[in-house]
Length: 143
Image 1 (cartoon, rainbow, N blue to C red):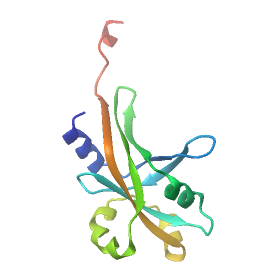
Image 2 (cartoon, one colour):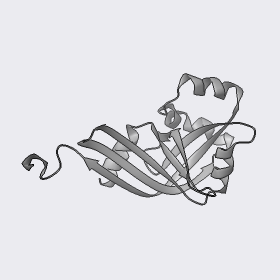
Image 3 (cartoon, rainbow, N blue to C red):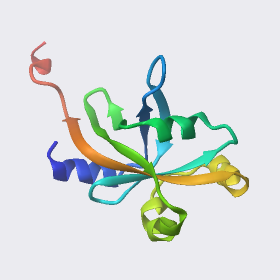
């Protein structure tokens, strides 16, 4: 996938997996996200008092994010992103309303956000790689 295909795919998705460095193995966290259409994703974290997600995010020099769609075994797309992740100051949150509006939020998320500690994080995309398969793979029909 070229950069335009990757951007179009990200603009039409709302959920992926955030990979953060951890002690024994990477921490993989399913996350909803908003895409700014250019070079950043935005996440809203609802955090507990001693949040592992917050600790790992703040300690990470780099992170990875995977977004995929696989409606069948012959039709799928995936985008893997590498970049940095940082807290967004609360003074900037109002500027992100439209970007974060596209993020998927189940009812339990909204309930937790109403009574919990909320932070917004920016994932600055440094590298992107997209893969796409549509239709039967070459040679499959010959078998």
